[in-house]
Image 1 (tube, rainbow, N blue to C red):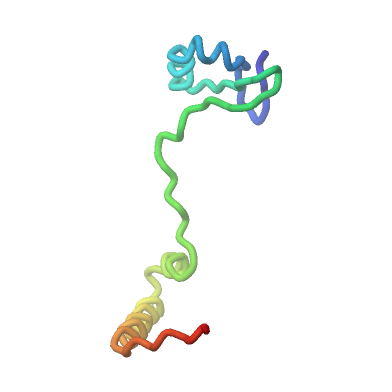
Image 2: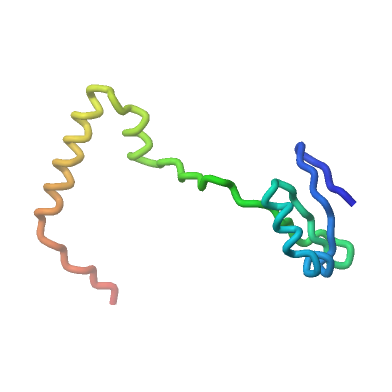
Length: 101
């Protein structure tokens, strides 16, 4: 049986068949084919290739803002202000831990 959906075709195979033909399945997966593995007639897994290039996580928070505004004159001034705040906090003495008891 073949599954079709989202412009992807996947060949169905049982766990036993996958075990017998594992090397063959890996060769086909390397060529871009996908397989649905079934156990007692129910789909339990998909065997598919990994993306060729790992996706880098999108920057979030301040880094995303700085990246979006890179090249703008005010960003450089803002980054310098952030550096000053960080440097000022690093020069402060450590606080005593809170009494939780």
